[in-house]
Image (cartoon, one colour):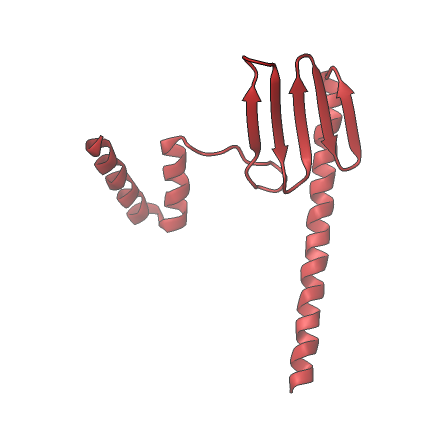
Length: 131
């Protein structure tokens, strides 16, 4: 076990020397293979839980974006802002679900930009008031 740990340390040190700190950690995470699945729209980790073999229950959700895909047996539940479906899922329904997630992501990014610009303008007002 200690040999593997020493090899991993050597690999990480070499990656840091060649590519820099942040890129090296990304590459090292891919090398180790213990990366969590990430949400395509917001980039946060996806919660995944499965009891498929025992009960046929499985859930995937992103708490940051607010979407959820829950499976119980042969019926699926797809939930996001502006979209809800319960029943058997085919490709067209799943495609509509993904399109709604992407639309929500675009709206979320737009609102975030507005929030940050508003926040910056409020900071400028505070600075003017202090002078």
